Length: 174
Ligand SMILES: [Zn+2]
Image (cartoon, protein in one colour):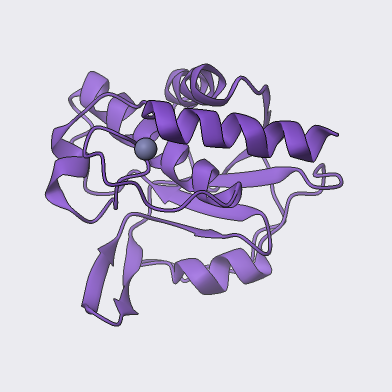
């Protein structure tokens, strides 16, 4: 089961579209929980995604539920061996939690916002099932900080990642 938790005010129609995209990609239902166990956030500015995921929770999550937080706040860039990368989303596999930010996506274009947010949600959920980054630029598991991720809009998995995620999900069910 996937738990979707909104960290701040996010349009309900948008949340349900992200939920539909997750269902389409992974064949799993998704419960929306309005209030999580959120850590105290700075009044403004970027959220440290790793720190947030370490502290945040969802009261309704049970067993190995995956929890996906959605926010409009920016996430602070993080350091990788290759340098500092802008961060739009992050998942922590060991905790089964991920966060996705809508910050910086043009909100006036609702189709674009839906596609981008859904694709990031698919990406982080795939990572929570242990999938690695994918080399197919059309796939949601492609590295999200590379330009083709945003350019190739549709939130979808390549055949390889879809089969792999099905296997992981079936394994988790058994
Ligand atoms: Zn793929």
